Structure formats: structure tokens, C-alpha cells
Length: 315
Ligand SMILES: [Zn+2]
Image (cartoon, rainbow, N blue to C red):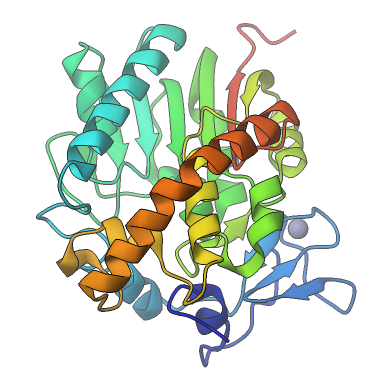
């Protein structure tokens, strides 16, 4: 039966109108599209769209305080680790991106943007749910300047019209400019292994569930040259395995909930269950590392990272 971690099943039972079209390619769903728990798999593009389609109120509630409280999301060192990780990411991207301003779409609390600014690079983040010195409360479609790079770091899957956002973003790139996208890989080994309990389904916040082929073919269709694809760089690959393995245990403990601060947790979790989840995570880690090596070697890891460049001159 459904344990505390099966948010997918819980969301799929929401009383709301079913999703009628693919959020990625716009195809109107019919009998040929496969119905999964909480999502519909498009028979044309192979991308799954969350169903039912959440209302603004439902999304507002899903992003409410428990998800991103001002006191920080994770307990103990978690928030420090997150900041350090974002700083490392900014450093790596700073080294590979062409010089000039960077647009971070779905900037969250602005950690990545601030890390760019600290390195002396002009950077602006877009985030409808936040504010800050380098944050604009806008959608990417409302932006019209030219950028050396546009980044969607685990944000594309949160947008209501991700295909349109990506197309607009490609048009914002200066010649030679770079698009960076990191999203969960919905056809990865871990996605298949954990099914409805896979961490990165994250309904209803994730509205599309992309495959590498759908993402890459769309990026190429926008006239961009794919320069690098990684199934590890997008992060959360090892954690996806550990979380999934722990969730397979009796009682389906939710590791993600266990590491969050108590105010940020979705459901009340007693100390015993929390300790059980954390202990299981430690035991699962070596197996998760092996699974990660296998998954990444098979070029089918839990996340897809794509770096693509707009040609310097149109020929
Ligand atoms: Zn589609």
C-alpha cells in the first residue's frame, strides 16, 4: 500500500481536470498516449506530462513554505553543502561559458547567480517566487536582451510551457552563446527501477518528464550545436539511487523528508522513522555508488546535462 513517500499516487488522485495536451510538443492526447500514474506519456515525442494539470493554487501550495522556508531547506550542514555545490557549479560553468552576461532561468534563492557575481561575471536570475539584488520576478518569455549564456538548472521541468521557454531562450543567445540545461532523466535506469516512487518525479512541481532524445532533438531543432552531454553533471544521481533504495524498505521511509528541517517537511516524521531512514541511507550508499557507475557508463544516468552553442555566424 501507499507509504508516506508515494507522492505520485497521492497527487494522481487530486480532484482536478486531466491534462489534455503534451506540455513539451503540444500534441492533444488521445487513446494512443500511455496513461501512467500521475502523468501521460506522449506518443509523438516520448515526453510525459503531469496529470491532472495543477491549478495556480495547487502549485502555490506545492511551493509553499515547507518547500523552501527562509530558515533554509535542509538541516545541519545540508544548506551549506548546497551553497558549496552551487559555487563549484558556477566555477565550472564560468570556465566553459563564453565571456559576458549570464541568465539563470529558475534561479531559486539566487545561490548560483551570486556565485557568478562573486567571480566578476554579470548575472541575472529569473524566479517568480523569490526576490533579491540579482533576481527578476519574470518569465523567460518577458526577457529580450542578448545573453552570452542562458542556464536552465533543474528549472525547465517546472515550467508550464517548457518547449516555448526553451525556444525563446535560444533566441536570446548571442552568436557563439551557450545554452545549458540540466533536467531529470525520466528514462534513466533509476527512473525505471523506482517507478512511481522515483525522487525526481516530484509531482506536481515537475510538469514534464523528459528523455535525452526528446531534449536533444528539440535543442538541435532550435539551430544549436550540442557540444556536451553528461549523465552525471546534472547532479542528484547518487542521491536518486539512495533515496529510491531506502524507499523500497518496509514502511517506505522518505529520505528526502528525513534530511529536511522539521518546518520544511511535508509530513510529520517521528525521530525513530527518521533515524531508520538515515541508517538505511548509510547502508545503501555503496550499492548506490555502484548503480551510479553502471547507469552513467550506460549513458542513461538519473540526470541529463546538455551544453549547446549557437553558431558564431549564420552560413
Ligand atoms: Zn509530446
